[in-house]
Amino acid sequence: MTISPQVDRRFRDAALSLGLVDVGFDVIDSPIGPLLVAVSTEGLAAISYSVRAEAELERIAGIAGPCVLRSPRSVDEVRRELDEYFAGRRRVFDLTLDLRGMASFTFTVLQELARVPYGETTTYGALASRVGHPRAARAVGTVMNKNRIPIVLPCHRVVGANGNLVGYAGGLERKTALLELEGARIGPTRLFE
Image 1 (cartoon, one colour):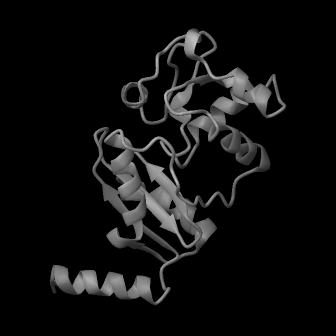
Image 2: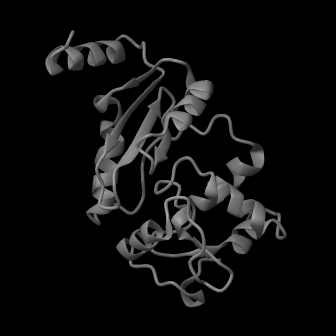
């Protein structure tokens, strides 16, 4: 049995309108490739570079609730702000974030990460120092690697101690593209301390 796209859309919209959806998600296009975006009833819960992110959706469902549904309408606000960012018209995101389920160190690091200005970079060590753990650069690197809301929580703005690009869960080519979009220079002369 095949369901028409109109019936499918009405079903998804009705489920969303009735509050039956804990997490709505969709895949959106971007200049750096498709992004899987998940929004819970609390806010933006995940952006993934993997459009086949079943594990990520299961993890979010474990935090936000089991009713996960592909629903383009649920990610409209995130789509709009990401489109504005990629078009160079947005430097700060106004999205509510769902950071439930994070350890306190992770939460603190991500809060500080959010303060790194558009177009600037910082180092793992500087970020560790700013959260009161100056010897925790590697732990900060782990937080960046597991950041479930990249771009909005700008882990691409974190570089190595010498200013060089190092690891990025989305790949160094995406990190480079995001930094170039923001006009950031790679190197110690533009580091945000």
